[in-house]
Amino acid sequence: MRLRRSFVLSTLAAAAQLALVAAQAAGVPGQGSWETTLLPRDINGDGTVDAFYDKVLNVSWLANANAAVGSVYVAPWAVGTEYDGVMNWANAKAFAAGLDVYGTTGWRLPTMIDTGVSGCDESYTGGTDCGLNVQTISQDGQTVFSEMAHLYYVSLGNKAYCTPNASCTPPQPGWGLTNTGGFRNMQALIYWTSVAYAPYPADDAWYFGTVDGSQGYYPQSQEIFALAVRPGDVTAAVPEPHINALLLLGLAGVVAAARRRSS
Image (cartoon, rainbow, N blue to C red; front, side):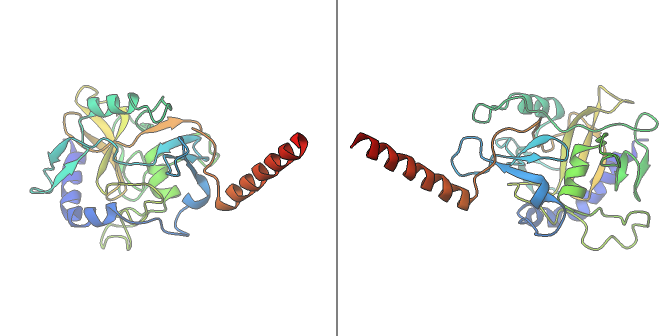
């Protein structure tokens, strides 16, 4: 029996009223490592952050966490609420692969590793590939078990519905998407990964739930959100204001020197 789908739907139904608020949550200083590990990148130099370079995972996240707008879907867990930017798994993969962000290509959906027995080794208290409080990265930093889980739990410091190594009754205080860092349009719902679910590879794929910190599998035909990521750094860092001032001062010096030489 596919327990993950029923758990997802029941959890989302309980959290649907929080989704719109959480989606607009601002970056929370001191929560998670995002202020030092997610470095802003302005690809086209227009002053808007286009991506974040994750120096721990050595990947770049698209700053717009719901860039695939234009497809409206009425979610089964929140009848009457329309979500814009959701896609089935095949379309989500194609969307990410086809992204060209000011000349930067090579985007994809986030990856994860199916550890242990093939399929969902479900636990709500932590340490597995499925459920809540799932594996993020190995202690030596060499194995990334789930890019989305690392972003949610470590970089942004969000909490799962259940307390790690404890019970779900009552829910963990402060659970859910309370910190979105500098991301725009991050939805407190569920996002596709790039990995098919091995027991049913033609039918299901792995997802990560920013609504409650869950990881599990979901029918590929259903429409949920997509966050694009790519290997490595995308461009130089966004200049800080004082750096801009120094650059302008240096440029003024060069111009003045050129004028002296020509006079």
